Image 1: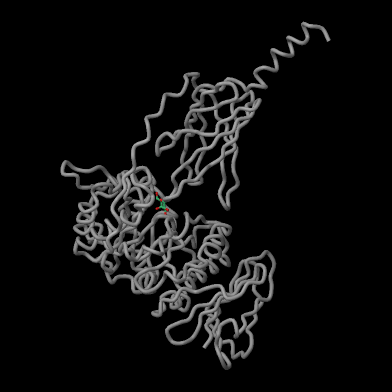
Image 2: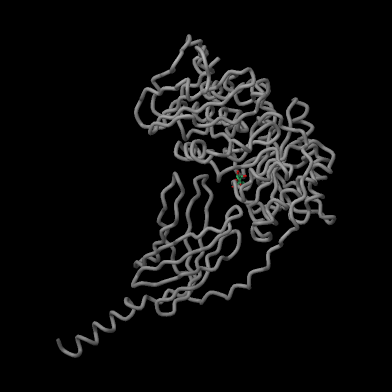
Length: 504
Ligand code: GLA
């Protein structure tokens, strides 16, 4: 090989071996499933094979760590506080003629996706300000129980269907619909406004609703006039998850405002609180609002939303909570519902009981991502788990099939059973599972689930139920008596379906 050839190869290889110079600001955009545009900004600096910089999100700039350049490939880690826990998220990317093709992380039912980011400037990243010290609150003081939610709350919540499109008009129309379509009569009483109602604070620091909700008190009066109750949403952090005003440092004032408006239910969502509080202060942070609600003098159901972090079952009730989320957000897919409902509730039953419930998140029934068979499983499992039943669909426009699922009185009676015992899995054979819960009248509710892809026979054994003698069976979806059994009850259960019975 001639000398000149060696040097040409050398020149070409240097940027590849040591990594290309990627210093600059990179920008890409995607559409979220609900149609909103989301921008990803990555500011990078390369020094040889080292990569530094930060990633911007609505929550602020997060430094990248463990950054490496290897030829035309990069990798780095972002550490984010998510629901009271630090999570390491791994990103990788590959340089092409068009830009950097990033692999964005996925979720349980959504695979990671590719995102092309393009360089919009070659300026090196600005230095990030040093992290602010997080607040540590003194240990939690127990909050006296408010005596509400003797059975799991039932109602509707705006988030799953409406996201930021919820408004005064939507809430009024939903309340009207709940009266007309039989939901109110079936026990669904809370009409809950989720995130995106918040406006700015006035000169005295009082929270105001935004232009979508011209008069919260008038709305509460309207909802009360229908014999229903109104719920609202806030965060202990400075910002809610959708980046609206949170209750940070305004807890007592906000509780008084909510009470004055006539609010009956508060969902309190951790969101940005992790930026200001140490995670270990979470119980005290929640107790602070629990006490403020109690001090407001109005009965307000208190719903903790912190995705099950910090072992919430151990302290949620003592913080004044009537219910607490046990998981991340539900999505309208079989994978998501199946994962949250079947896998993530195991072992939590000891925390549930009258006035304090595990919350595997709101219902997706009727939102279109699952079949009616799957929605029947969703309704049955949530009822067996003594979970809150908060419909999350557009109740102004419900098909008869979906309404029948939401209005099944025999299934609702299981959810609302006075004994308040959360059901448990009593047997598992691959995808075939039997779950049961004891009821106040001495009978048991039993679900024969088939989580698999093909129809199969599912068997419930009397010995697993721990009952003696012969048992009378009633099918809660067929609304039919099924005679008696002594050793076992078996039924053919289609894929993703359930047979739900009571056994007397
Ligand atoms: C979080 C909660 C959701 C919803 C949104 C609103 O993701 O878990 O249930 O309240 O915030 O921004």
